[in-house]
Image (tube, rainbow, N blue to C red; front, top):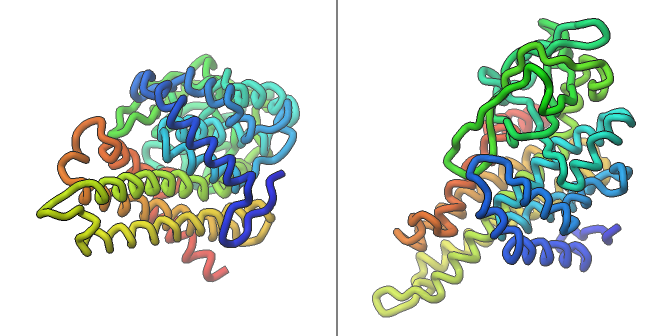
Amino acid sequence: MAPPMSAFALGPEQDDLMKEAVRLARETLNAIARDGEPGRVNRPLVRALAEHGLLRRLFPGAEGSRDVSALELCLLREALAQGSTESETALAMQGLGGYSILQSGHEDLVRRWVPPIASGEAVAAFALSEPAHGSDVAALELAAKPDGDGYRLSGSKTWISNAPDADVYVLFARTTRDAGAKGITAFVVPGDSAGLAGEPIELVSRHPIGRLELDGVRAGRDQVLGDVDGGFRVAMRTLDLFRPSVGAFSVGMAQAALDAAVAHAGQREAFGRTLREFQAVSHKLAEMATRTEAARLLVYAAAAAYDAGRERVTRSSAMAKLFATETAQWVVDAAVQIHGAAALERGHLLEHLYREVRAPRIYEGTSEIQREVIARELYR
């Protein structure tokens, strides 16, 4: 294990991990990402993440025998985002779907699915959102009706990362009507199940995402994650781990935008001076750097709290995601303004980040939902 992080700095092993991940993203993974079909799962990229040992850090051991470190997950996501947002997303989605199985699955499910997910041979997805119920998890409607020794699943899911191309879905369905959050069950559903269909959704970024339609999809009791009617707990345990790392993804994008803005302002001349010599620009850069660092420390603190098993991790996770995603949007926008029209050209780094940075304020709980969570936690 890497030495613990202090309140102010990473340990040497953690620092080396980030540097190596940034290097891999820029020198190797980014080219593979560019060759992928926009909006669809890039399987060569997923396998490359495994071949370079990054996926194994989320699923260590032959059968995922050790829990992932939330801090290490954050470091990986931040570092990859600085060099290749597509690579970061591919890693995160494998983790989100696969770790739910590792965390809550019985031994047979873990043995069947975690090794191929960790090796990049199987693509995983986390299927929670529905057309009428995005952030309102307790209100989902996809029905799981008893059928012999199992269930039949019918309904729709949407905005599901890696759909419709995933090999396995962690899918949440209602097993008890009118029971709110207490009537939801998590299932592991193979992507080739009879009655399961889907289509991609085209977003402003290249993110692979789609809809799913389930028409009587069979799921045995051996496909249940955790307990029947205990799916809400499965979802929340997974999201508590991954929400700070959404913030880490955003911090990585903010850092990439800040680096680009610092370089541009030091070279670009206007009215006989470099942009950095104008106080309006230099003070903007200072504010960008300060907000980015504050977001980074909030993310690291939330991750460290999760790893330490501390109470109130839900509040710190929500704070980290809220502040980091909002900060990243502001920093990227400021970097675009410093660059001017060139940053809006298709293919420019900042044009890419401008499209990518918007989604994290929505998925895994909108900024508004994070504020609700934080406010509720204040009165517990």
